[in-house]
Image (tube, rainbow, N blue to C red; front, side):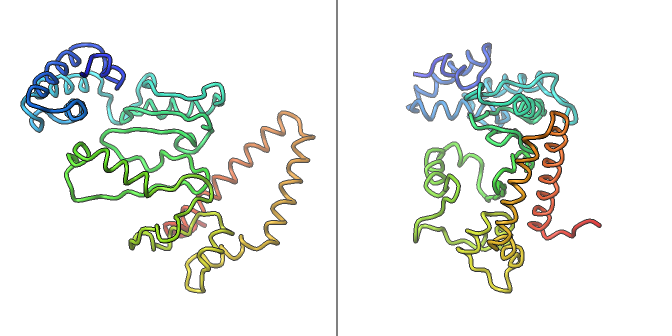
Length: 286
């Protein structure tokens, strides 16, 4: 049976909303609804306008509308303080990474977030960070680490489908998502869909592995880049420069190290701009 403690663990604030939720849960249970479905309906009332929910949930939905109105921040203003978020391995995470995450949690559209133990400084969000927003899509909330990218798919179905088939959809995502560096589909398991044949997927990847796997011909949009970066001679040059920079860093003082770090971050940002523009087939600004 759902309790007030259960709701608090799901992020509900103590107060009137919990009382209304428990009352609605009792009524839904009397109608034969199981606990998982009751919780889904309560969560739905938390984010759905009152006129669109079951009549049993209308008082609860109205209370949540009042809560959101009281907490509302103008769309162009940051919150005074970051909203709470989960952190795993806080002792392993650098202060600048935490500061970046807290900046994201001050956004008026942010409703939840998390930092993983391997989190480190990213671009719009720490690598290893998770940001949940309401009423907004945030393509820049990504760390941009090793070919990280986002794509948005729009389906002509009601959002209610998520509530009714949440477990089924989660299972589909887990079965069709690969994790870890170098991970790929087992033979015969790769889904066939025209979106996966988009040549823009080749803009960022493990380039040598991309060449071995894709074997681009002259018509491939990024063939010259792939051939260049996959050339062993280029890899040797990169290794020599990396060794040289390591030697310079060992002899550098604190101020020089800070300058080296600043130059490195700037070069990473310029490289990211280049590959992002290549991805979207934009022209390089001159």
